[in-house]
Length: 312
Image 1 (cartoon, helix red, strand yellow):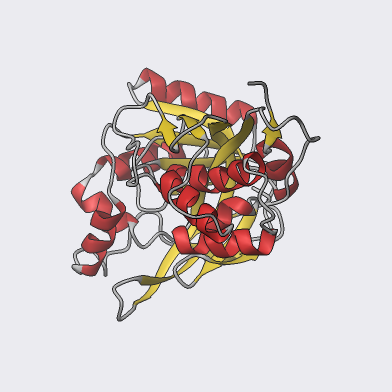
Image 2 (cartoon, one colour):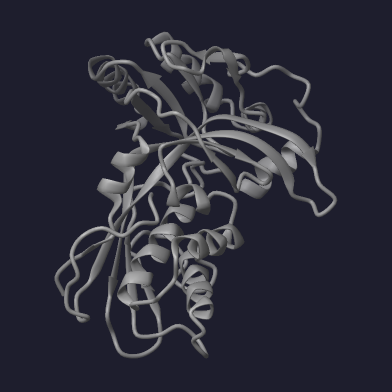
């Protein structure tokens, strides 16, 4: 999402609302493992319109997080909490963050490779900056985002982007067509730490996964840019459902199908709403949990994300 705020000013007592959009990794190449244990990446990120909702409400007292989704931490283990702390310190304020509560309404599944926690953190930076009336410039906000985690800076940009380094060195790319994306959610999640550990263990590293050397025909990426997720093979070896979902989406006409990020979500890209809807119906008849989303360009991400003033 754009770091630019939108909407007209409202009284200080109002709530601030933003939508935190998910992403898919059209490609994720691991170029090397660094001495500090992190991995150097080349990844193509794409924003989609599946979104959490992040709402900041004024309250006297300590900062707090509210979320009804089971398993979502409500303390410093949540990246939203660390985003609030980092923004508070950047503004030169003393002590722990306070005088705000953030409610998170989850639609992006955790441990799905869709960046839900990182997107919530980016939305928290934007909403808290407005709710706390902080004179933090966009450039400084991006610096804070990079300190929080790999994907957080992307969610201040949206659209299509190339991520280098740990994935946090972002270079906006030309927008892709607003194609449809079918998201299939397995019954299990995948820890990011586990996925990279399996890759590092070398198991399946040399095996070519079914997603290797796919292309996004009909878009500017075309045949010249092979789209590969290096984490897919080691995750699929432990969870064969990944491969079954990928092949099912391709058989139903997906331009490409792959695991997103470290998993476990598998996505298929479709050129038409009708084709995406047909694939979703088939998956649901076979007992799979799934939904349809649509790709977002940078302008649409900024317009739809917010943040905007709401009602108390």
